[in-house]
Image (cartoon, rainbow, N blue to C red):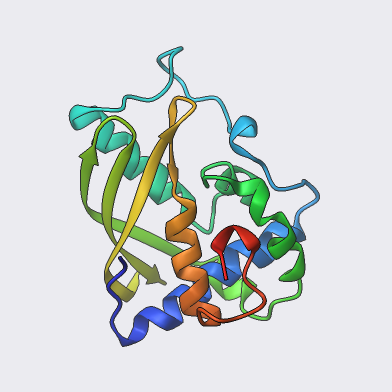
Length: 174
């Protein structure tokens, strides 16, 4: 479950709309897990356990929430990213997209839940200043790589649009 302070709703709104809106502004279609950029190192993928696994989760999380990273690459770090494509297309003209491209995150802790999960405590920053602290989310290990879980992304969408919104992608449930 996600813990959010009052600024958390704003942060969720900014991050969600920035990822979704900016994804449509590029010329490439959203990337799914199979389109993830190859990772240097092990042919079998990222480590899934120990300190190396924690570092891999943190790295994926920071890349996903980094507005300077190209959107197709960021979407490649999202579980079931293809299921979010209709939502991403519907948010193409958001007014907050440019602002959100400045958002980043910090990760304060990663707790692995072998063999294929992790809990992440993070903060969202805008211009280096925290908008929301102590957010919790999950990462999943799939296809040899750590991904931000669709449940975490859906949680951000629910904060931004309200849980009963008809705008939410089907993958987030009703």
